[in-house]
Image (tube, one colour):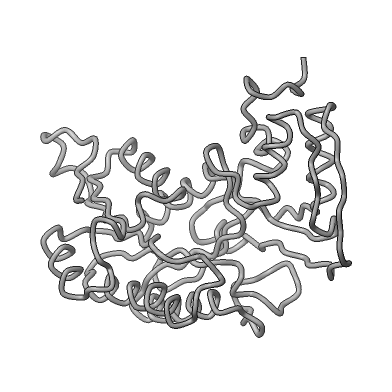
Length: 292
């Protein structure tokens, strides 16, 4: 339920109130931890705590707390769900929270809204081939921007405790369990991997900034092919064996973010690039392949 986290009562009047939805997810849990450490007065809600589809309940809770900032992370990411279900949560819940909020609003969208564009992706691009999930994100973005919210479009977010994709998860598990890594994706596919520490830095800057009504890409701007990712893993963990299994040749997909706007508006730049960030995923105590 409602949580007031890590704040001495004597400090309550000195810090901003931040209302976080989706606080039990991978990103949400790290966002809350970081904000508490930064001295914010944090209230965390997930679907288990508050039915975000119930407009009256959302209004009651938000109006009672009167947050200075809402960080809206709650949403559905399962692409196989029916469009109506994705819409009711990814758009409907966003609208409920947004309508109840008088302060700053930070919304997390996805690089998948760029589908159909050539990389690198820039904020001005309009996706022409979004899947149902991305369509609901596009609709939610629109209402956020109309009310002066800040929209972060994210690539793959990863970090300790969560590998970010099945590819990274399988690679991590292979290293830690001293097993062959079975690569089932085209090695020519490229991705932009954003470490959770860099994401958290951008969130803190956005809370304190005067930026409104903007879409901002986050990422590294570093385009890493899956083949390159495997080579980085093999260099760091020489015992790793790789098996490539492709039932069909996939089209090469390029996927990287232009992050110059984040630098311009928030003075934010990524600090953790994939080669360093990948090492943070691996439990070296568990791995039998780590370097001596």
